[in-house]
Image (cartoon, rainbow, N blue to C red; front, side, top):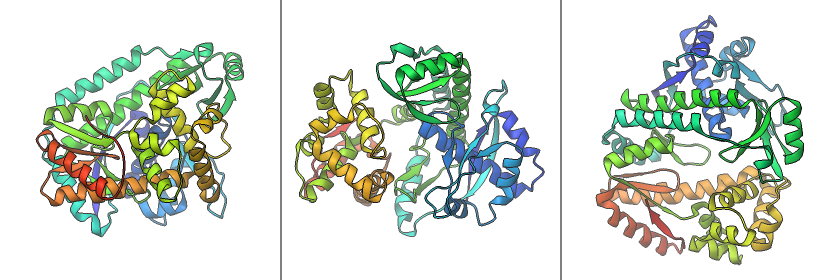
Length: 430
């Protein structure tokens, strides 16, 4: 079934695709592919032009077997860059990125309507439709949303980055505008100095780039992605579908920036109910059912995981503990990390189990496994059960979104369901 979405792209990128000389159908696929690449790149790296994988199977699922009809012209024109590294056994798909030159121009973004195939599971039709009805029933304060966008752009312009020796970590994963890799901090500073730039940190990520260029690219990416989210709702392009990898429910709300969602939540008296350190509570539940024991399981169930890591490893704050834990648990087994030794002394059972799963099944398996468990719990059991009771709600990854007037009912239902299945966690509402 065809769906539509509004996509905002830099004018130079729009003009280059328009000038390819391909049919309107292939042109639509070009814009769709570019949107997928920039969306995946932004989600993973915070920038729109980093290499992200796109396998042959994914091309065939999203487009069709003749995907080279539009990919080849994009590559030949230099609009999309491919790493050209591929292994026929499927372990290494091609990686693609949009040329960063398009994000360095001083031009106004252009709005494009893209059609795409919506891939849904037949047995999810009720949950999907209820989510669509929930979104369509919301009041959308467009002026407030654009004010939030303006504030985000202003904050990005004003933000001061931590630079060079102000960075406390001794081992950093840096992105140099083309690729990312681990480096000793002092060596990274030396490399940046040699290149005539600096090593700096932004939102927990590290860069060796010209700061002015980085900020310019980030501003344009924020404007394009935020305006796309707003204009899709304004145009009535509502969507909800199950992600075919992790089974999460993707919708206009889940893919919306937090500051925009907060504006809509406040205007509609929405509340979110979720578990503290939710994915680790799920992991603790899995480990416990396998007969494993340890302090990690207790702390994850009590919702004090990050606080204990901060105290035991003398970290500056909860966010540092959260990011450090994620980089250890979900990264390849041999990824260098200065916190891993300390974390292993606190939660040896966690490191042993995570490394065992990643060694046997690949490092991506653990995160996908937890997301699948999370989706089964929050989408199918909790949200589905509440909707069957007539409660108007939906999910945002590991939380239930509901009206404030239904909050008490929702909290009690979740507590009863979790207790019934022996799942221990600490709930919070926000």
